[in-house]
Each structure stands twice: as structure tokens, then as C-alpha cells.
View 1 (tube, rainbow, N blue to C red):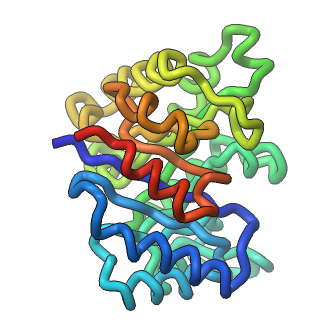
View 2: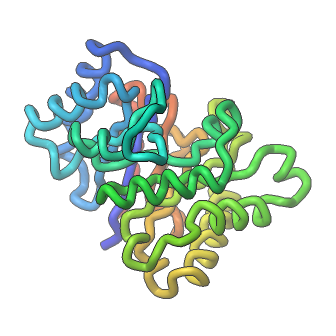
Length: 256
């Protein structure tokens, strides 16, 4: 049976109280989800430990995990304001988002830097949710596949067949993040199929088991259609993950 992953990227939102309340609301209903649906909550790093503890209190650890939204590529050192993958592991996180378009856009992160982060995450035994995707200008110029292939080759450079078991790819068309726009199911499937084919070139049969999430304005209304596509294995959810009801509706949209 196919296993789906629904990850919530809370971005720079919530307070410690609202983070705890949101996590509680999610985990209280997680027990009722289909067995092949797993959840990841990615709060601001300051609140990650609180969310880890909330999940533990509700005995939902096997169904709900916690991830950081970013990490530094070094394990420790004089990097003011940064957190490392080893710190994420130390407080109980299981995932780290890497390569998000907002990090690329606002922090100037390159494929080379993100590749170092992917290696840092994997070295700690954590799972990297590695984001790839094109801008509106790149899509209009018919450069979608070229851009994504470059990002994949750069971000996955040096990652072995054994290591890639702990990599999740998230396709996030940049033009659909936070805009209310979303790729049609056909557009999303086309890119996911391309990503799967590229993974096959890199990792052979292992590509069949690598989960590929859709990360462009998935919501309660379009989730079922998107998740029904053969190469879409879940979602990286932004705004809709800030309300437990909408996030859980997306999770329940999986058709087994």
C-alpha cells in the first residue's frame, strides 16, 4: 500500500501557546487517519521542542513527527542565529525542510549550499524534505523541466542509493506558493512524473519508493484530486496547515 506524507510548514507563524494548541488539535485526530497517512509538523524552530512534547503527551509519535524549516550545513560553530541538523535531532525532530523557494529567494541559497544541508541532515539520520520548483517566468519560458533537473542534480549530488531512502522531494511551483493559485492535477502529475523519471536515472528502482510531495497551495478543496495522481505521494502544506481542520481535511483526502 502506498504511504502518504502530509507535512505542514508553519513558516514564521504561531506563538508558543498557539503552536501547542495547533499541535494538540492535530494529534488528537491523527489516530483516526488512514494507516497509510503520516503527518509532519514544521513549526518555527523556537517552538519545535514544544510541539515534540505535545505529540509525546498524546502518544501520537508513530503517526506525527516534527521537522525544522531549515538548518545550517555545519554541525556547530560561530554561525550566529543558525541551528544545525544535530540540534534538530537533539530536540526530537525527524525531518528538516531544505531548499524551500523562500530560502532560495530571500536568503540567496544555491543548489550547492542546499546540497551541503542535505548531507548534513542525512548525516544525523534525519529525513530531508528537499524542495524543487520553477518560477512563473521560468514556466512561461518553458524551462520547468530544465530548472528542476538542475536543482535535483545539484541538491542530490553525492547522495547514495542508501542515503536517498531518507530524502523526500517536494515539488513547489514557486508561482503557486501563497498566491492561492495551484497547478492543475494534470500539470502537477506531469512534473511529478518527470521527477520520478529523473530519480530513476539517478537511483534505479529505488525511485519507486521515494516520496514526491506537491507543495503549491494544496488545500481542502483541491487535495483529493491532486493526491489521486499516481506520482503525488503527499503534500507540503503552507497556509492550510495553520488550521487543524483544513490540515486534517487534506490528510483525510487520501483515497486508499
